[in-house]
Image (cartoon, rainbow, N blue to C red; front, side, top):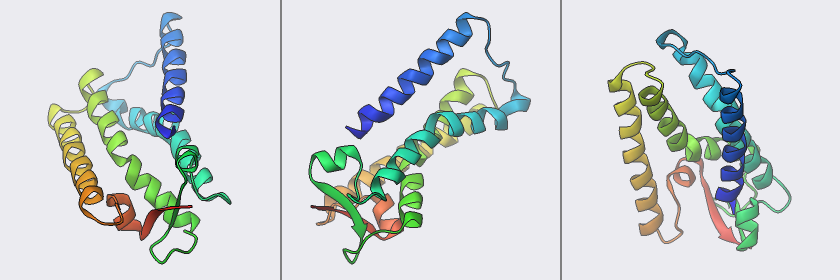
Length: 157
């Protein structure tokens, strides 16, 4: 469910981007505007998804739409309510592979920066994601990397 929310957002902004491009209104990225492209990626692509996750997990029901649908909520390790800061950090860590993938692919697609930077970003994704999945698979509480680092866990309601 949460992936569908994120996908809907990405499809919407993708459609807007395609429309702007068709109208000849696209940015002229260059290697000198690499930071601008990164900031746009975060601000338009990931920040709204992160805000959605933090707002829903800090809500009274303590879970995103997807978690609530399957009867889950996010709490601190001791079972008490997670703080907004914990949930914001948890979301930032959880979305970091998405961000790194965007950075790596944007460097390849728009010829920003160096190929080494692109490979480094994508290499980080190929380390972080399996480590996170591996932790979730082997730990009895199914805690992924973002839960380990922020002192949170996902529990049934």
